[in-house]
Image 1: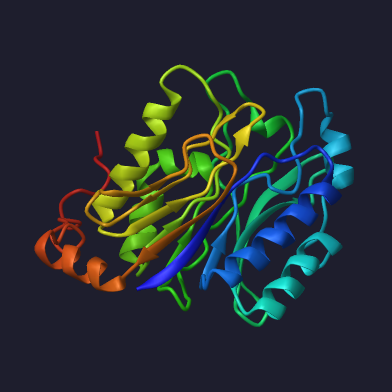
Image 2: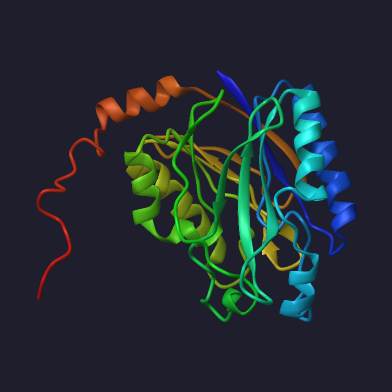
Length: 269
């Protein structure tokens, strides 16, 4: 069994206050013998509806900036892997990438993913401030298993999770900031459980709480059992996972193996 620390936090609008909180959580996760510590989307800071695209862009950083390098240093000192997120500068004026990154225990970035599906739905339009990524990140081998990375709204697109799973992912990590609203918590729970069941993998989904977000950070096992639901509590949750369960479920329910990709390609009409 391997321990994963899931952080559910309410982000401040101030970057420095969030960074202090983040670094403290990493230390706490390491003290609780966690191999991996995962954070929600938009952990860098909460951007209000009044904040302009240019103001957000001015606060974004490169991956070599102080925000990420501070996290890498604490991850190295505490010998723990971290999945974090930040607003990354993009080549487009007044737009930023919504980026997640994965470190190793030595404080090196081993994977980076820029969110490809922007949340232009249900009254929101992320594309007014964000710039979409253009590729998936290959699943990466870690101390807890092979990790596939996606972000929040990506969960609504089953093709992405399936591609990551069929490419070897045993754990899907989805940092999120799931906006409150009608049926939104029901969607959140159903989608996370479905992605785990249909791919025979763990889904680890740390979420923002407070502000406009619903919380309910989840860890779901490969057979669809919810191992952790943090409800509305801000803080750290610890979950034990086992890759043996991934192997067992994929053996008795071989959905990836039983796919008929020779038949169901796009239909020509």
